Image (cartoon, rainbow, N blue to C red; front, side, top):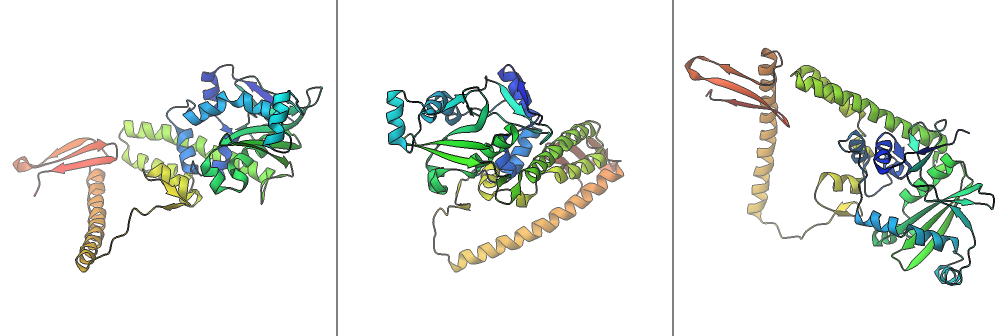
Length: 346
């Protein structure tokens, strides 16, 4: 056993540490069990520009009420009614330990890239760890979507903590819309979710992180290739970068659609705005649109072929102007989407 406790001391160092590894709360995304984040979204975030922890009002509220939730957990018995009785009478049925702020737990022998930060640990009278405790506040989305209002992503997070901290059980404490408190116990059975054993799971996590590290190195080379206008190398690097990314089929439909569009979805299907009866005139217009789109795609391929030929003839330069007799010219300029080609040649 190689359990290690890392102290990052402050929020800035904490953010840097999160940027250079994967936390238990992010692992459900990799398994495609997070309805709010697609694998490719997490991948891009870790490639990212800013490693700062993204706070929102929901997260802030959860953090502010964590101590109250922990106290309710210590008093939990059977249901909300009995728990409130114990809370009001000061009756505590279990002991907990809270890690100091900005501390993480790791076991690099199990998983090199993973770190966990349990909300609380169940302990005995001597302070020995008995199990991991994860405290969640759940809204109407989870209540309607999942059995007992418990998201699979929360289960993955808890079982990941149990495995890394090497404890036999875990408690998932869920506050349902501030109306009800539930406690669900999980045993460590060697599996993270059905069909994925711990050892296999850790390989999946390390592979995902390995691809992020490869992509970071490729990105650095790509930046240099663009800076030096080495177009051929830039193309090769972009293809290599795509190979590192999670495949499209690995992306959860709901979270992926939220990431790439401004629309929101329910039950993984976009809501229709309204239906109207189609007319024959509209049918012909749509046919014309489809034909024009097909012609446009073919024309775009031809345009790209000629663009590539021009660049190859100019040895891959990305920013230049070629003059011809009669004041004719072709101007090639780099843009955020590739290159722009302008010419007055008829």
